[in-house]
Length: 179
Image 1 (cartoon, rainbow, N blue to C red):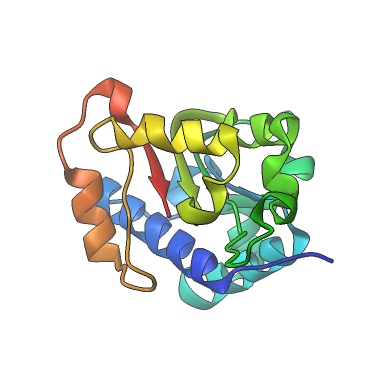
Image 2 (cartoon, rainbow, N blue to C red):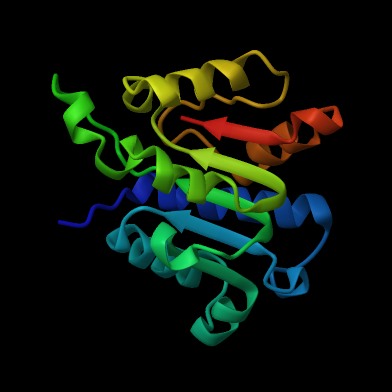
């Protein structure tokens, strides 16, 4: 069964809008150098629908401007800016067994090694941190200024994201993990 997370899809669209505002460009002007990957086909569908609804009304133009696909479909590709949607947000005791794709280190490696310049990971850090690999990744980014943002559920906006993107950062601090 494929999974989706509408909140992550909304946050992804808001993040792309904030990136566009920061750059002073349109989605088309990025020339297809933004990629969004997720483990689940249902999330790919949710993301495409959300982008059409909130950013680019023309589905064909959307395909030319941003690549939204599953991790398996994205294998071998690279983009300047990558956004990964983890999707999983579990609140029960069997978290380790329920992380599914997100616990597979080889497939995760494909997901987070595709950006040339910027990588954003959108996920529930509480759920992901039950996996040792994710726990280390999250802790690493928490210690680096400008690399980890904890947002209250559904309390994000393009303005808030843009202000976070505008915060002074060093070249080494150009990654974001958002729970």
